[in-house]
Image (cartoon, rainbow, N blue to C red; front, top):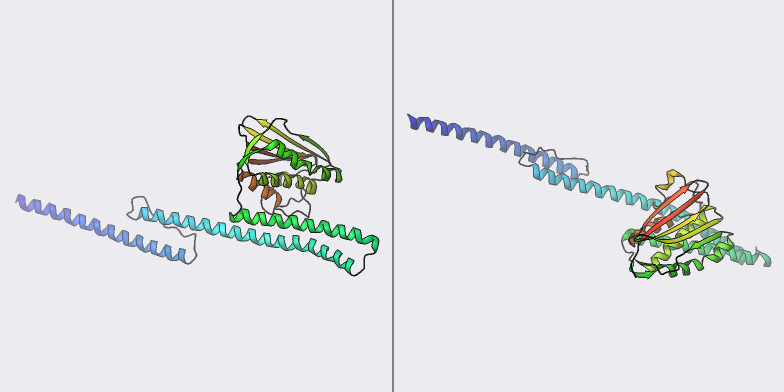
Amino acid sequence: MVVILLLSILLCISLSFAIFCYSKLLAVRKQLKEITAALSDIQGGNGNRKILAVHNDLTAELSYQLNEIVYGYEEQIYQLKAADEANRQLMTSLSHDIRTPLTTLIGYLDAIKKGIAGPEEQADYVETARLKAHNLKDYIDQLFDCFKLNSGEFTLSAEEIELAELTRNILKNWIPVFEENQLQYEIEIPEQPVFINADPDGYQRVINNLIQNVISHSHADKITFQMYLKEAAVIICILDNGIGIAPADLHHIFDRLYKCDKGRSDKGSGLGLFIVRQLTEKMNGIIDVQSEPGIYSEFIIHFPAVEP
């Protein structure tokens, strides 16, 4: 009797276990079908499809990992679309910004060749053509820098440089430009040596682009350049008393191809400040901008100082 009772209990347990296993098997088969259907949708281009699972499902870990793959896939698609849109904007800007000075340049040179410009006008025509050629070269240089930065081909050779003297030499070349544009200037650079780890050419591009931005877009009549040490950082400030930058534009001023409605003129490429930020960050620096419309704009750069 006892043996029969034990056999009955074992049989019930076996049947219960079998039913439990069968139900789990059915659940797994259902989940696998759902996973297969979801993967088919994803393969067909539906990146929003997700695989639903609760934590105690046998396929939960697999579902979570597949969802992570889908999230990564969605992010890549988003980045590709953003890059495609940025490249489309860049090509639109390129076709306009290159065609305009190039057409003007050709027009002046054709006028000289055809004799439309008299002897007295020829010198003015040649000078205008020369300036347009330089503007075109500057734009193309910025364009190549932008392409290199985006492709990861732009390399900087970091070395310990003495920043005070290097900056003096850079600003010496700008003083005639300041005077030609009737731009008052104040320059404050420490007498003692200041050292940072940076690429000299990259640093020069940053300073040149920021100063050119003031000259081209600020409508200022005064620029102040200041360098000083603060704790373990070298601070560089470029301040102008121009038209300023609207608050809505401040958060986008360093974006590629971004042009402020008021803070920048039509001749801007929208690449100069983008390149400035990229180069500054590649040299372990930080750049910020502060402005009050109609009063001032100030670009502030922080570089980690190096003990001599």
